[in-house]
Each structure stands twice: as structure tokens, then as C-alpha cells.
Length: 338
Image 1 (cartoon, rainbow, N blue to C red):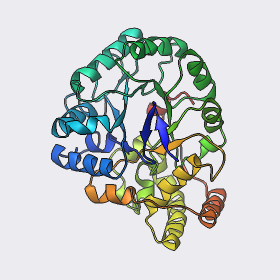
Image 2 (image 1 turned 30 degrees about the vertical axis):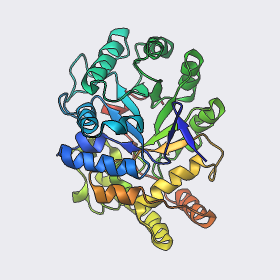
Image 3 (image 1 turned 90 degrees about the vertical axis):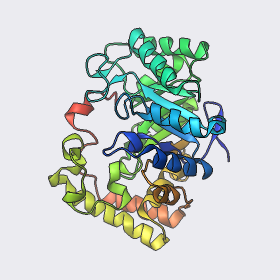
Image 4 (image 1 turned 180 degrees about the vertical axis):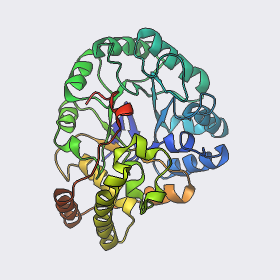
């Protein structure tokens, strides 16, 4: 069955750009473009980037400009979702740190994205990375809808929003997508009403961090494997949470081993199964894993189908082993509308 987002067909797995430009060290453009090209050839044509994914002169936007300079014909094949309206304390200093969904903030963000992309690719979905608590969501949607009408963006998405906000926003202008964290480490959307609401309103869900920031890659086995500063930003990497979360990873790895595939492949297949209604009735769900190498993207995009035995085994694991720690620390949690 074909999957459509923003009126365009997308593959069952997309690609998140953050790992290429926002993680230190950034991936050299030539290598990053090889990764993006392979991902596209393997069907991952939904691209999810951010204006603040890296320094202002080397973010997702500059990488995409470089890519489409090399491969201009690929622009028509890609569905691009771009996040903005967020003053990153490290990378963007247009105003106070945090979301800015004022009319001026939205205008500045969209115009900057369009300027850097240079007309080489369209923005199919533009989404504020987080909602501005000082601006009613209705006002944000009204402002964004003017850019849709003007043809500057194709549609509107929201990220990290609750069911009430989704309904309020969708009543003003149809949402093209809702982006949430969803993985074997983050199963709350199965019960908090977000998936139900999106299914009811026919809004596709874009699932970010399907590997839970590395926990489900199989590459984290010791505290020394955790990237610098992750423990401060993400409590699931705190030393007191590490042992419990490693236990969950090892249990899921056993399922992958019996299946004859990798841990990341099981993690992605589980998210895809939600969108197929295998776990529960739900909306379209497209995970957007990121990676930094050609070998990793090939592994991630090798299709794996979970059968009933696999899904039952994972359900049993999730019922017996709880994730330790919140998704975000206080410095980032304050921006969430959940």
C-alpha cells in the first residue's frame, strides 16, 4: 500500500538529517551526499531537516543546497520537511533561546530557509520545532497558512504536541504531519491519544528518534560509549538509568538474533508495524532514522517484516522491562507541549 505525506508518495522509512550536521564531528559533505543518495535510491525519499541542525553556515539547509547542486533531478523525488522557528542556544541567535512563533519569527525562519535552499528544492512541510508558549497555536497556524497560500511552503507540520493542540491546530488549517518521538523506548503515543487523534483526523505521523538516540543501534554497551553531554541532556543515559536500559536493549537484541537481523532493523520494523495496524489501529507512521555512513543506511533500509511471534515477544518485553529515565532533561523538556 502506498503512503502519502503532503500529497506526495513516500517510502515506508524516511531519513533524518540531524546526524549529518548537528552531531560532532559533522559528516563531510561528500560523504553525507553519498549517504543521502543511497538512502533515496533505497526508497527513503522523506527528508526531515532543521534550520538549527548545525551552525548557521553548515546546517541541514546548506547540506541540502550542496546535494541538490550535485543532483538537481532528485529534487522532484524528495519530500522535504523542514523544522524552524527555534532559536538554538548554540547555533541560532535571532532572539532569546527557544521557540519563536511570532509572525516575525515565522517570517524570519521561513525566508531564511528558502534563501539558503536557493530554489533548488521545495519545502513540502514546514514545522515549528516546538510551539511558542507565548503564541496561541491558532495564531501560529494562521500565520503559517499564509505561506501555504503564497506557495512558499507546501504544508504545515507540528512537533511534540498533545492531542488538544493537534485538534486546535487542525481546525484552523489541515496538518500535513505530526512529528513525535516513537520507538521501543518511547511507547507513550500508543496510549496517550496522539496516534488515535492523528488516525481520526487522517494526519500522518513522522516518528523521530526510532533508535532512541543510539540506544537501539547496538553500539551502546558501556557508559564510555555515550556521546559527550548526552547524560546531561537525556536522562536515559544517566549512570543510574544505564543498567536498566541496557537490560531492555539486550532483551530486544535477543528477538533480533532469533529473527536473523540487526537490532536497528527490529526497531524500525516495530515502528512501521504500528503504521500498518499490526500493533493497533493507527495512522500512517513513517520513521526517520538518521546515520552517518553508507553501510549504516543500507542496513537501516533493508526491509524486515515482524510476524505475530516477533510482535508478541516484543510486547512481552515492553510489559516486563520499563525504560529508565525521561526522554529529555529539564533544559529541553520545558519546550514540549505534551
